Image 1 (cartoon, protein in one colour):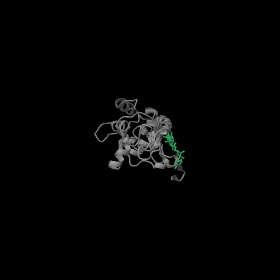
Image 2: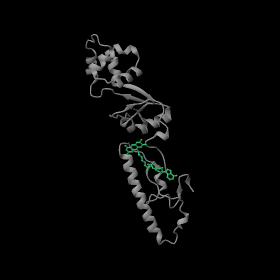
Image 3: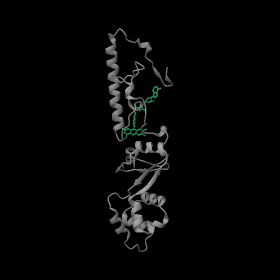
Image 4: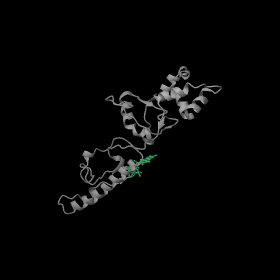
Length: 209
Ligand SMILES: Cc1cc2nc3c(=O)[nH]c(=O)nc-3n(C[C@H](O)[C@H](O)[C@H](O)COP(=O)(O)OP(=O)(O)OC[C@H]3O[C@@H](n4cnc5c(N)ncnc54)[C@H](O)[C@@H]3O)c2cc1C
């Protein structure tokens, strides 16, 4: 994937083709960039390498072998060990006329363009972008503008690749905010400006009251 500055981003990993699109660890790693490009251009172009362990010359060589009585799909499956999902994706994203040209087909296998046109809705998101800026917090993770309200986890404006890091950061910021509560109560215990506890806004399931 190519970013706004023209830099190429490479990511090796696995992904899953679903009814709605594509997801998985390889996609999560580039999802922030994909989202930015979709917001700017209404699309983001991924270039997929379906056989990262074979170079293009080796693929051409294998595709030039005699096909015998095999169907095109069987031949590709046997020669290249391409699983059905990759074969289907290749078929979906290429025109039929390149399938009999080993060089063009090998090129498509090594750099298959896939257009991403939208992200999934927030309700389905594993992690959300945006949130409360760190500049709004004091050293106790407390909102400068609403004393007594502490922030942690996904409500903060940070992004991390998924795969354990989100939960780790949520736990870490939760711990920091918990310690912040204790610090704040201790620090303000002797302060003449201490807020009365009733001025701290409780949170109810309907929202803040
Ligand atoms: C399907 C899925 C898979 C994931 N897999 C991973 C993974 O493998 N590794 C990883 O690191 N992360 C993973 N995540 C992300 C991780 O779960 C979240 O980043 C993390 O749980 C966020 O923690 P949080 O405490 O900020 O928010 P949440 O876990 O969303 O907690 C917020 C809590 O606040 C409650 N609440 C909301 N509004 C109010 C209100 N007004 N009053 C009182 N309570 C309220 C909610 O009911 C909820 O219990 C996954 C997420 C999803 C959805």
